[in-house]
Length: 397
Image 1 (spheres, rainbow, N blue to C red):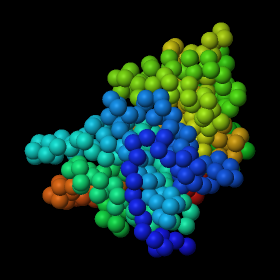
Image 2: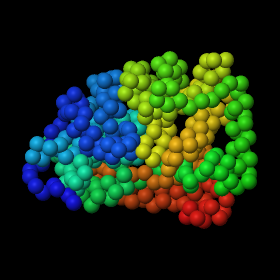
Image 3: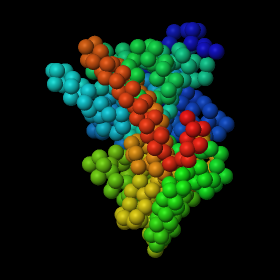
């Protein structure tokens, strides 16, 4: 039952999470965590505060916090991680062509507004509402964000990696709906990795076994650490891996070194860290975050190149962990059709958009309609090329 009609809802914009109690934020962001893990850790107070306190977001980063808070009768009923952005980096839902088109027409695309978890292409709720206030809370947050954008003459508002239910509701409220795709592995109640392999075609099964054997032949050991198994020196090693990947992919890493120190203090129970070590020294690693039903693959890096070690650390170790922990799926991050051969199938992801310029909005709406059809077709085709045996594919369909 929605309780949103019992009083006026007010919207406040905060520039720091210091301005709200963690208990108020998390009562909206992760109420399910009262009896276990949050659905995902990325909208929790501790994760967003780690980004802020480490300087990964804030002044000079292009991610300036403008957190939305909706209150009714003195109760915080909804919050959203809103940021003012001066670029489109670290979002993974690409709008560079939109920026170019608007600027060619004489408009200014930046700054813009973004409701998102910075640097994190993982699906989750973006309109974080206290139970019982879902419809009223979401409506208030959308109205507040759009009004803030209009009042400040900003070009647009983007809500990225929201849930499908939020995407449907947001479209009904007049926002533009966009579909993209990722690759996820789904746990069909497998007893172990061999049971998963049993669902694959013979050729794909043999290829994966060969890859795992080559990876484990690199001359060292591979282990997955979580909680108190993770030690501060492990972050020294992972920082080197992360810098290497960040410099090649983005020019400069998105996260600061300080983020990993804070993560060690407040997030290590949410982390599964895969470390590959040789002669007692870590040479490669993959960072995953643990949700209530999913493992979220986030970062990989190395200081030595070894055949297939990337596939083992990022994809196969994640599957092993998910099976052992009884998790429903592994979300392996953005892009990467190479994941398909390793049992990760394409799924739709969702975002919502508001564009201030009516003509520009109409043009983007037409583009999104065609894009959605293309994405749907792409998912269907890619799924048909998946590694699973025909009868298993038919069951999945």
